Length: 76
Image (tube, rainbow, N blue to C red; front, side, top):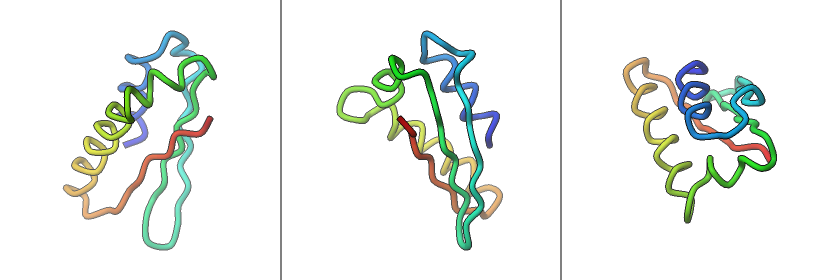
């Protein structure tokens, strides 16, 4: 899952070397914290949050196969 988020984010940004995905295990879910270069935050979020929503949808769909609850947070 971490690799999936990383690959998608690196394709969107101008500074792919600065893409980091941290995993935070919580009681009922796994949170993936996506960190990108400050100038790339807008590209990852997209207009009205559409790209961020699509990214979350893809990750959630992939997690359903493994019966896991996940969320993606974009850390600025």
